[in-house]
Amino acid sequence: MTLVAVSKTKPAEAILDLVAQGQRVFGENRVQEAQAKWPAIRAAHPDISLHLIGQLQSNKAEDAIALFDCIHSLDRPSLVAALAKAQDKLGKRVPCFVQVNIGAEEQKGGCAVADLPALLADAREKGIDVVGLMCVPPAGIEAAPFFALLDKLADDNGLSGLSMGMSDDLETAVQLGATHVRVGSALFGER
Image (cartoon, rainbow, N blue to C red; front, top):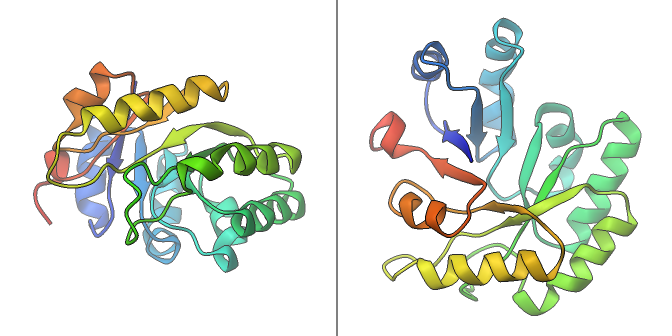
């Protein structure tokens, strides 16, 4: 299981404290914020892996491919096309998780469960290395059924990666097969 330390909004000093303790996988929500702080940190610590865990606009696909080692928020055909084009242009392949809107919430990103097979087929056809599925379950209710559904969807589609679980529900996510948990406040303190 990979612990992705969510460093969004955190200054370099706080990140370097975790690096000194051995943490090597970090997650950012926004391309611009990551561009501002990570090149210097990674120059000093080239073994760090940087994951994009927030929504990605298609017009930022090339910047994301250049900077990140993994993308957890592939969620629509236009982004598949933009990432494929950026990967070809830069000659770099970045593994991706497809974000599933597991609770069918209008305000959240992610592809609808019904659209998942078509999106996976499109991504695979365009040479995207889809390594798993990601979800953010609805807030305020038990996460376990949503994590179990994501695990089933991954199995049904031949995927082994499960990016699920955050500070409040990481134990449940791990019990239900998470391969990546995205933890911020439990590591850095509340925002």
